[in-house]
Image (tube, rainbow, N blue to C red; front, side, top):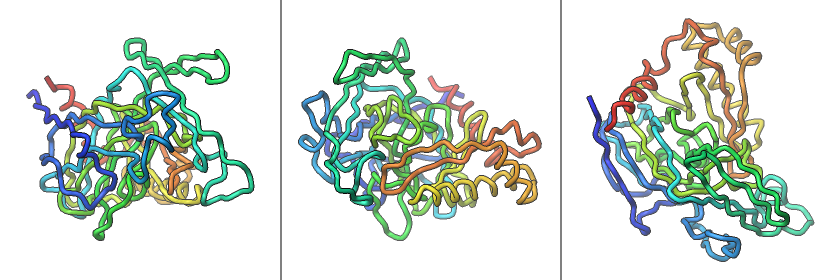
Length: 336
């Protein structure tokens, strides 16, 4: 049966800048489909080379998200499955930048050094949705190159527990600024529910991003994002997890990167063990030899890294979460 979509277009003063501490903007039920407009990390204020982020943006009003959305029947101890159906750039351009004391290759407040800060600079990328390209144009030469358009959601999460409100710039157990290119259309994200209603929010679209997001800024875009949600009752999730048609992935967020790596791989080994019925060290050995470790970001207050393995390597495995990924994907195909 065809599914109806719920559409939400936030007004400019309705953006959120934290996960937690906000009233919901709309209610969804398990099984609903949401089409939502999201803004880029600069709130749409950086539009050209003259719009330096330090001059046109105001802290802490960076990285706005749309929401939160109250998910009925979601309670602490449940898991919320979010299937990304489509992520469409809302404009025919995106922007990236460098700015002082931010990024992997400059001194920061955490790693101070006696050197000048990086120059603040803005790059504007043309987006050709029909051709599926994102055009890089060097600022100090005439070099251009077309990169594949690969839209993703950089920031998506639920409210943390314990009455906390966390900045949207921070990734952690609740999700947040995960900044992994794996959060593209066709992926299902699993997040543990910490509060009544889960309070889902998302934003920070990227037209594409390299693994690690070295300068700290992807090709930032506003999007129209369509997703489906389902509440998995009585099944907790300690850390964010992803599932695609071919892989399962666990996400770790921490500093240093070594700790994020350990979190992700500890979770994946346990997931493989439970899905495939393997003994712990056998699962550890399989992940060690066949796993992948895509890096999300190395610039945010916490770093993000993934541990991934192909589902074909687990031929006897039960479907993750009783097959919710396939169920949501099939339901999305029936949308009008």
